[in-house]
Length: 561
Image (tube, helix red, strand yellow):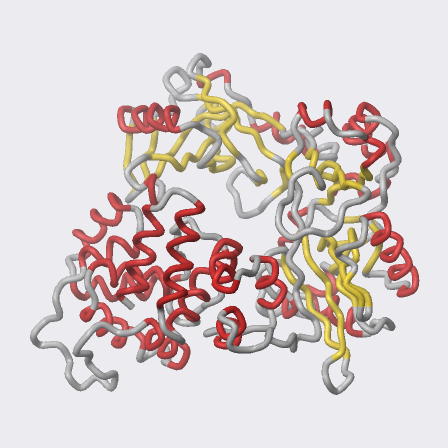
């Protein structure tokens, strides 16, 4: 465990991508099995532990440290794992020796930790975790707590971790990614293949995930170099990007799965779609599309889709009230053929044939937008209704540009796909509350709650409408932090209330991508992707926008544009 902890510690302080790759590849080259396999799983986000939650850590540290001291320390440090690791004291002499978990004479191995967490019951976990913490040093404790909560935060993505292990055998991250969802920790067969000790692992998943292709946000200067004749355009729908995959297992039974764009299996939350996909007349397929809610003959806004997300079980009532739908963008696999190397237009023709043959009401095509020039496409982006979006216009959040000759390439390759989202809405709001951030921002007030004016019984009052924690530079953050500290009027635990008097408050220009009604918010509204576009040091708080300004934006329900 200590060696893995040292790797995490070094990764956290290594700023360059090349340096991180070197550190991980060296670790995978020298660490034994199964240690390195579990390390790879942790770095790639492939480990989860049912009962290891932040509340468990808080409960343990409360038994060893004065709760007030912990609260003060956590407020300053801003990271639960780091705070607990630093404060954790030596084991008390009267420690319970009747515990069924064995006491250690040395630090645990990473393998021991992972395997134990997979089998320990909820009642036994706190005692065992305390034993491990007693046996580790500060860095080891930090790594252990980061591991069990699934929040490493060392600047390593899943793709980077896979690229580093691929380097063992002179392979690419794409080669490992293609195998990934048919493998399981500690990946003994993967390491054996990469080191030339065995053949490439055979794919055993009848409905595997295929690494997603992503788009770059288009910039104004791109239109000067891109030729519109070489691109196709389609609407960008406001849902969740998914893959729908169907295939047959060894017994010939159809298996269907739905994955997020990062490969998370969402199938259990969408049994209505799985039932339809498993009845596929085709021998197998994998399509890229958008997960949406379609009812009353139209696509509903994202806020309606949220009713179906992040649910372990779905009731019959939920299935009936929020019917799931997939709008297909691309076809990656058909029967036994990998279509990803084919040009987009050829894949599109195959997709149209597949969707037409199925005749499934829960599956349709994302229509292409005809255009001859960039100004014409700009008009379509500005007015989707006039360019064929029809009843679904409220779910359009922009357009996608795809090079007609482009293959389906993993990651975010340059020059192939672009997203051109509709212009965000902007509103002037007043800073009301602030809280310290996490990680590098743990000592700065970087999370801001803001509000707009409404009429109250005592006159104009502010009502919170959102929270933002990005959109500003480091220099602007320093000024905001200084303002918060000098204008605090009250404290509620880690939250500071900021002076928001009409004559003294600070106005923030907030940009956001969407707006929906919400019964969970006091204002009755919920912003989507709010961010700070500008700090209005020059504007009096009394001149910030009122709730009626936001209410008016809901009326057309066409989204920003």
